[in-house]
Image (cartoon, rainbow, N blue to C red):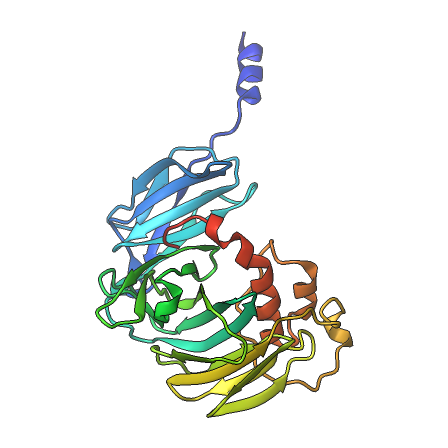
Length: 333
């Protein structure tokens, strides 16, 4: 009987709870009262399995045996932080980071802002990317006033698709709202310490050669206007940075808070777009890398472009992700 009991015990799966400590990186101390949820990643999205509160010492324990892939979501002070738990990874002794939240930007600022204009068939897609760097120790979140503000002309009909990517996270849909200023819209999404990316897309009517005006309502350190290969962009007050070799896009620096440009032509495929970035001449505008990371849905050509010229990388990234933006999950990272 004893031998049989031992065999039965050995045949049972080993039980391993999910345990760890929540650390507040703003204070440097363990954080009590944070909600830690174990979530399964399935065909229906993120499904909550179980959750627990961190105790006075910041410790938590969830009596489950993850067989992955799972994601741990830690909610504190109105913001959720994601921690991936791949299959086979340790589930005990985890350290989960949270931050205090402020309604003021603090150290958060727009380090890069790109506007890509893609006219086609009487319509023009305006693609804007904002990269926020937050070098501080507090997260910026203001649900009432939003974090990102952007301008959208009346001709867009108030319709914009916004994807937001938290530090180390995946792109998800972000809520867009109006402000008291005409033409200025807000995005309800937290800017955590690290780098947060916003991708904004809207469409406006397009007439070849007609004037198009826009504004920059954020305080950007670097703003670029980009015309894809086949499109000519003219306007006053622009700093011509030349052509990016891989995509053949023409890049202009903008120092002002408004622009008035004239666009002619339509985008055409670059003859060098499918070539290795290593084979391209290094005589285009040398702009520092502005994209934070790659995702699995990005095609191999972008992998080749990584580390060469980030503007070309951004154009290729956008062309592959724009079609699927409306199907992404809506929420906060």
